Amino acid sequence: MQSRGRSEIVILDSAGKRVDSFGATRSINSGPSWSSDGRRIYFSSERSGSPQIYVADVTTFSPTISRVTDAATGVFSPETSPDRTKLAVLLFSADGYHIGVAPLTDSLRLSAADSSRTSPRGGCSTCLNLVSGMPPLGTADTSRSRPYSPWLSLLPRYWSPVIESTTDDGTSFGAVTSGYDIVGRHGYTVEALRNNEFHENSAWLWYRYAGLGLPLVDVYASQSFSHGSVFADASPTAPKIGTISERSRIASLQTTLVRPRFRNYTVASVGAEIESITYSTAPATLLPQLPGFYNTTHSFPALIGSAGWSNARRPGLSISAEDGIGASVSGRQRWQRGTSGSSTRSAIAVTSAYKSLDLPGFAHHVIALRAAGGITDERSADLFSAGGISGTQLEVFPGVELGERRRTFGVRGYPVSAEQGIRAYSGTIEYRAPLAAPSRGFRFIPVFIDKISLALFGEAGRAFCPAGVDTTNGVCRVSDVLNPTMRSAGAELNIDTGLQLDVQARLRLGLAFALANREQLGASTAQAYVTFGASF
Image 1 (tube, one colour):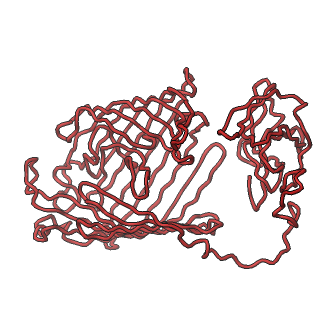
Image 2: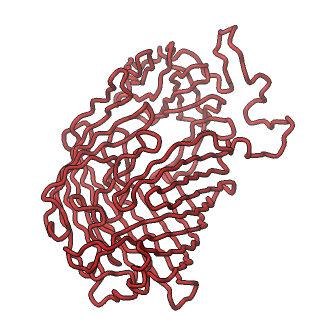
Image 3: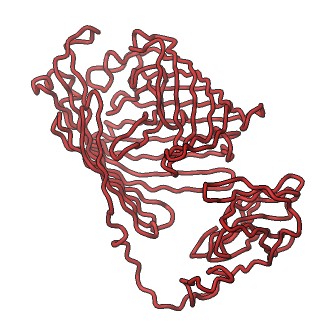
């Protein structure tokens, strides 16, 4: 635990309550691990000036601490063998990290540890102590204080170009910047874009205030545009006669509570937002011919809430979350122009479950399940969409992103948003198996290959409007009524990588086969794809 310039090892019970602590120092303590008999804790500490391994006898309170290594370079992450006769560590050398193993005997103990040392290294007469005169740990600092001001460290220090391009919306150019103060009370991100095809300006701002501790307070504001085609009629061969544009302006205020524990994680948030939606067409004469819904500016004040809980485990060498479940639910109550008579409600629930299998390989095999459902009403301003690959977008160069965004109702093998509607559901089952753990780099190429695994999947999903829905004044179209279910199966090769030394990314190479309603939904028999991030 690190707090107020003090680092120490803390022992917790199974309920997450603090039992004991030791090793307090102003240097960094890290990588603690238990011996198999539960009598000792090994950890890495920089209290001597370089990372070394220390051991604490925790059979009594106020444990005795001793140093057990004397490496010229750093050593980290100690682990003892089950019979407590060997100690394995990560040894840092000029050519990278190595795993080192040494016999674990009493003769390895070099000296008692000085818990109050702040550096320099012992015996180094030319080393400078940059914190001379610092009061001992646990005592009050009597130096003069003054009110904290975040403004100097909060100013933006950079900007990055942004390029976005889609088939319907054309290409937009802009820039993004962000900043945060040194103690983390304030943080923000700002992005602005100009669309040269439609001559529209988009922007969004996110700001978080963490000065209260909890709750976290988030403010969000945005203006965005989306575009679609207008056809002469609903037949598949109807000619395109124009374009419809939707301008959305959103402002929201949200508070979030988080409760991390040793074996589970809980988060909940509540807030309010207001959204204004306006439609236009090119040529402008098309707009009066569309349903009345598109000829009016819609304002939607709303109350929003969400909650999530998870106890799924993710061991260090695993290929997936293991042995646990995760669940989240979000809901929104909206009013059109603030009147209760024109209110709409929507809710989305997502759950996932994981079970490890102790089969051959460097990690557990995993059976993973996911289910999602969404419901809203025909007066809603938004439709759910189903279809497409779900993943993560990775910025490979400033302003250039690769991969697919996260989709609640993604179905691999079908086009993005192949279906839309006010009802949606999806379900996925995956079998995940470890293949290899090369854990190697490629000399001067900044790419590190860690683990390789295989996933076999089956997936189904649907977004639709029910029979009898109002397609004249509501958001549903005639083509959205009773859309069929999509079903697919396939396989993925997952490669866990490290890019530019510190960017973790999962590369997914996949092949998906659409099994139902391919012609109706514009899907190919087989779809090969490349994306980043986990499927879920």
